[in-house]
Length: 496
Ligand code: BES
Ligand code: MN
Ligand code: ZN
Image (cartoon, rainbow, N blue to C red; front, side):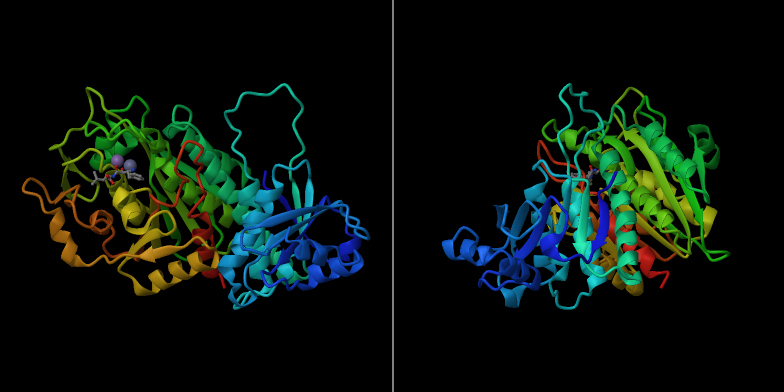
């Protein structure tokens, strides 16, 4: 369940909420909302600033109790930094910090006045959506596999209201935020689930749950036998070492009459041990997140369907586990892909491209989409290149690149483009097949993209490498739900 988002135009001092959130600039200047509360409370806010207890430094917060003249029992001051430098990034940070500061307090509701601040180049609808998504991301807790506890559940933040007049544009902004937030939550929950539970059959069951709960959505699941008949030798090669049989999952949404569909394809490796090219032990547990591309495209599909977008959309997920076994595929095996191209396997750990190539060919053949976008935790090299902040975008289509980059910027789910020049293609030359599945030590993210490009001929296509962005590193690292916001925004924009 996402947070409940609403609009509030009540006077701030008399608003009924567990906590008011107000912004504070570093030079001590107050936004309109903070100024109002300062006035009704007899200068309480200015006094905390004068005492040095609240600074306005970006990322700082100060919690005040029981201000005179204010009905809400708590007021949270959020530092916004310097007035002249306040921008979209600062707004995001403040929105995240405000809920991070509140999420462990025994409160159920909050009213944020951050949406009342000016952010250059961004309107109220953007501020509402951004603040709502930031709040929901911070309020999320992973609970799926925790033991039931005997103590009563503590109070949890469940509702957030934003200062804004209740009009059609603001309501639309919150509706989009609700849809994207449920897509993000879906992707995070599926990503976080351990791989003994989240196997290919579970991913297929999740897709079925989406189809069953939404009118107008249909589901098709191809089993191993179906894929064998079709000739998906590449995907099946990866799958053959696992006791968990592969599934090729396709969801369809028909909201756009006879128009060609948009297609989203997501890498669904439910666990990537590396196969016989086994990964080192340290950090291998993070490879439960290797299905985050699948989770991301399913989440974006869910968001698009909840918004009933007037487009046709297909979401295709090859769900496979990559395991070492007596029956595993080997380095030097030659696989015949659905496209007919033969592939020399030089490393069984470069498995994502091997399941995606067949999924891309099948998607193109089956649905003839107007655009195909894939999302995949494809390469460690992409994390080396771009770190944990930007997803890698690769496409030969200039217009599609611009649209995706823009969607990422506006949702703060940003991507950065890497070249897909043909110059890199020769790194994939093989003496034993049409193409090798690895491209040597240079430009690993790009050669992975180049490999996929060979299976998308004739279709407008873009590839998002989300290896760095799909989850937070470390013991307590959680799936982020990226790139659900970017993808959903891209689809919303195609409806305008
Ligand atoms: N799922 C991994 C990519 C990955 C690694 C994502 C680390 C996030 C963090 C992928 O299947 C993989 O193993 N890629 C190899 C490719 C190599 C063998 C050419 C890699 O990146 O090392
Ligand atoms: Mn791998
Ligand atoms: Zn992988």
